[in-house]
Image 1: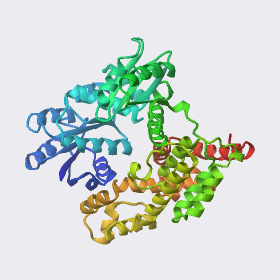
Image 2: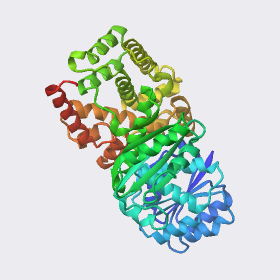
Image 3: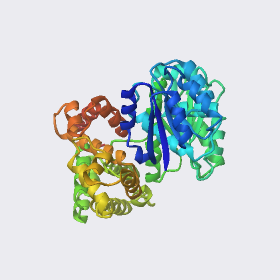
Image 4: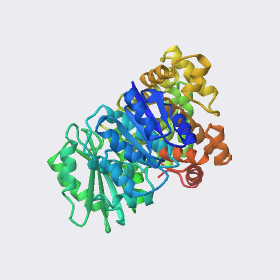
Length: 496
């Protein structure tokens, strides 16, 4: 277990930080708090602190001065700096002191959660050079949409990133155990008037951000084809075109979605987001699919559904690969828990016939339907009780701490057990259930977005919208409009 130290001269902010996250979920057994740098240093002399969240501007010794003071004595302590002022001189100095991140007040909870998660991972790893860490973190935040345009513009001045180009594409490279080689080769394949920035996700997948003033997908496709010829087992996936730096996160999300789509459809080589028909299922069919999962469906129910969606009188043209991929992605989006995608959703086996399609879809729906029914039954009695607590209190404030206060259990133990059994943090599970319920309300009622946010227990509407957009890649209002428009389109224009 790790220990964390929160340092801020304002008591209200300290209390807010201490309750912002369920720290036990992240492996922190003790939370220390200090109102000054002097008090914080005294705490560090008596306790082994793994992570500090530290305010920059404090009376007496500043946060930066304190960080300089402890760096020589406690080199393995990780630090997250916070400040109410967007002065890059602070960030530049923080960069030299090897901090995990520089967060502006008021602190975005999602960014805090993700920064702490990365910090916990980094605690067990060797630290990289401070400047490389800062640049990599900035690119990661840019790609994942966790930085404002003003902050991105200011911070980029101290890196080699050009954030003022007209167009960007996010390109994913996938090759088992050797993505880094293909990623480097691809980045070197573009003309010098384009910029390329790379970020390696793991040994199998890498991310390339391509930017330029006169970009088109044809440049990506031409470079990809020549590289795939040299690495036949590789996949190169192009996301949508981002107009300006603000749309880069959407391009990444679209590329990730396309990569999963190609795995399911059995495609290899090069694929782009814009090449795929994403609307083979109409909204009523998606709703029918979700309804089937509420109770373990019979084979007759599944066969009836398959007959409906493959009825050539409605315009279906025998595109079994793409239809199978779309069904599987829809099923994934309907699940609250983390599942082994390859187990429930293997690629469609060739030849891509109606028989193989029907067998693969039937197996996927049966497996997932049974999994959904048995989901809580396979958990320990304690976690089943936690899940019932979540279901019974979804419209209220929910936390492991509150549950443990009611049951006299240890929050650290419950948080760890929950993650071990369900494969995700407690807060992630709650968020998934709330967003899925919100989607149902958006589709089936005329409640306002703020009313729906309250009904799913998220009383901060802006935070609700932020969480919804992260999971669904669209705002709640646009989601409702898209569902309504799709219903109208499919009513007036059958599939085809």
